[in-house]
Every structure is written in structure tokens, then in C-alpha cells.
Image (cartoon, rainbow over all chains, first blue to last red; front, side, top):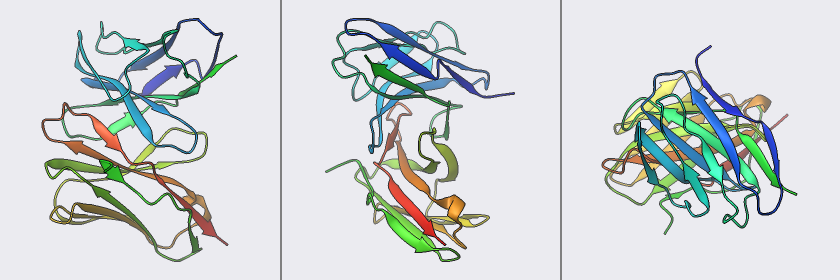
Length: 112
Length: 112
């Protein structure tokens, strides 16, 4: 099946730990995105990438890092510098500029 | 001023009625506009995209775009209880690095 796969679905992080969220797509899309959603809020852009080995900061990049070594993969690391990481993280991809984006099923991260 | 604004709702409509969801955006150079539906605890699902002024119909859904007024709307005809969800408006700016900016969403409740 074509689509976007995020893993894990649920993730628990201890204070001071770095964690990495996985996002893989087999849609042959060039662009990939990471968004964060807090309860009752809209989506806020963390990072996005239009091509392999290139990515740009979104609106709330502090405390996060990404890599884009392969077209299919865009992992997000939530570092210990992110002081309030508990949220729903959504990965998306799109074929080209100004086209619609499709989302994975999300990862719910909780700090314990 | 927020880049993309939506009334948070909830918007309540009776089953079978027309639901009208509205969205305004601040940047005149925006070129692509999207409506996503998000059920509680799930990821957003694309339901409509619109790129030029006027109406675009797809089944029970109609998207309306007025670039002069910087306004995009979504009409849902014959509303069903299964339409109860949060509807997110998203806007893509030309030259904006292909990043989608989302509104905070409007919660729709379709009552029996």
C-alpha cells in the first residue's frame, strides 16, 4: 500500500532524553514536513524538506532536529532542549510545490 | 493578525442541513488552498483543494475561493453525523518554500 508510515504510534520520553520519531513514505514525494499539534490547537510547522539533503526550519524548530538522507525518510529528533515536547506529531508529504499534502497516522509523545 | 484564521466553533447543524465553514488568510500571494477533516485523535485527511477563484464541487462538498476578499469556505450539503469532526483550512504561499500554514480548525457537530 502506498502511503506515509509514522512510528511509533505512542512514545514516552523521560526528562532529559532525546527521542527520534520515524517517518517513511513510498509515494515518491519530494517534499516532507513535520508538524506539531497541541490539544485543541492547529498544526504548527517544525521543519520541512523539499529535496534530499536539504531542509528548512519552520515556525517552531527550536529543540528539534531532522535529517533527509533518503527521499523516502524524514526522521525527527526531539532533543532535551525542547522543554514542552508532549504533543501529537504529524509527518506529511507532497509531490511538488503548491500541491496537497498527505499525512501519516501521527505519533503521540508524552514526557513522563 | 494570524496567517490563517478560522472560527473555532463548535458549529452545530442538524442532520441533513448545510454546514458552512469559513476561513480567511492574510497573505495576498497565497495560491493554493486546502480543507482537511480531522477526527478526534486521528491525523488530518484531505477532503478538498482549490486553486482558482470560484466554486469547486466534489460530492457533498463545495469549496469556494475569493482571492480578492482573501476568503475560502467549505460547504457540506446533507450533513451527516459522520461529518462531525474538526475542519482545518490550510494555505500555501507561492515562493513560500511549499510550506502549508494551517488555521486552528472549526469543530463541526451534526446533531440527529
